[in-house]
Image (cartoon, rainbow, N blue to C red; front, side, top):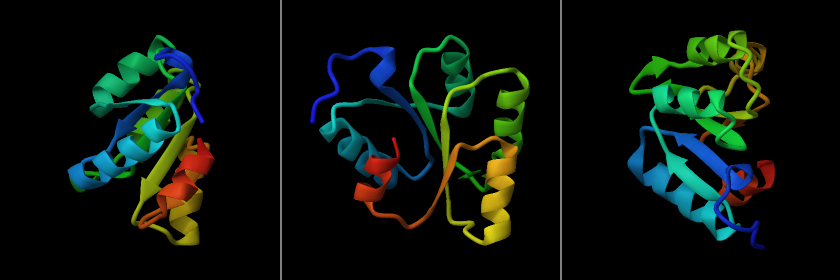
Length: 120
């Protein structure tokens, strides 16, 4: 199911520090016609600020640091890009914190790629 040419409307930003998982996510989403850009959190903010992507997939724990504050800052700046947070933190309270911080969705690790593809 192809989504069309490489344009911002089909571009997904991926902020993930586990290279194997990032590669697996990229391959799966590209198989569905998306363009996936593996980026740093700073680059994701810059690109999102200019509406250069349709969605951001954000690993909550990047290099051991919780990135919910960065997500809150993104929302305070008025950046509305849809954000799907992925995380090994999967308790009800942790998920609620992610949604309260501004996530549009929260996917607990480990997850099935088919589930991820259906959430974009």
